[in-house]
Image 1 (cartoon, one colour):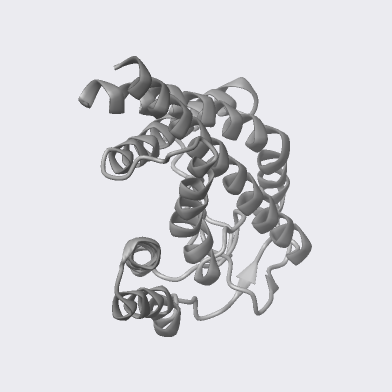
Image 2 (cartoon, helix red, strand yellow):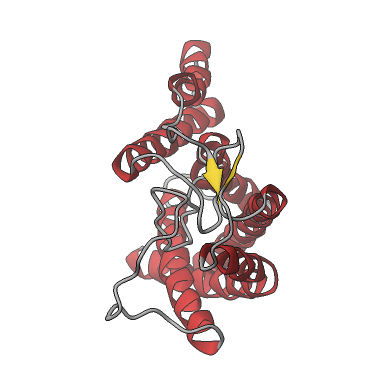
Length: 241
C-alpha cells in the first residue's frame, strides 16, 4: 500500500508540476514581472477597495504598499532560467505533497473511474484555492495586506473548514451532517478574512485583476490534472498489484 501511494504521488505530482510550471511561465510570471516594475519604481500608490492577498505559490511578502528595502545580501533567483527552475522545484514539492494526500484518500475510497479523479481535483481546488481566494485573492507584488499571521490563520482555518464541509456533503449519510457541512463552508466567510487598514497597490488595478484570474485558472488546471493523473496511476497500481 505504501509503495502504491508513493508511486502515485511521485508520477502524478511530477506531471502536474510540469504543467503548473509551464502555465505559470506563460501566463502568471509575466504579470508578476510587470507588477515588479511598479514595485521597484517611484510610481504613486493607487488605493482601491478590492483586497488582494498572497497566493500560496508566491514568495513575496508585502505588509504595506510603499516601496521597501531588500537585504543586499539576500539571494533571489534572477529572471530567466533561475526563476523558472526555482519555481519548478517548488511546484514539484507542493504537487507531490498534494498528490500524497489524494493517494492516501484513495486508499479509503478509491475512484471507480479515472474521470472521477477530476472531482477529487476540483475538491482540492475548492479547498486550497477557491475558498481561501474568496476572502484573500492572489495579490501582485506591491499590494497592501493585513498581518501575515492573521492571514495564515484564516487561510488554514478556511481550508480545514472547506475540506471537512465538502467531505460531509459528499460522504455523510444523514441530512444533519450535510447541513453541518454547509455551515462549515460558510463559517470562515461569515467571520471574514483579515483586511489591511488601507487598500492600496503600486500596480494598476487592471493588472491585479488579471493576476487573480490567471492564478485561479492556472491552479484550476493544475488540480484537474493532479486529480486525473492521481486516479489513473492509482488504478494502474491496483491492477498490477
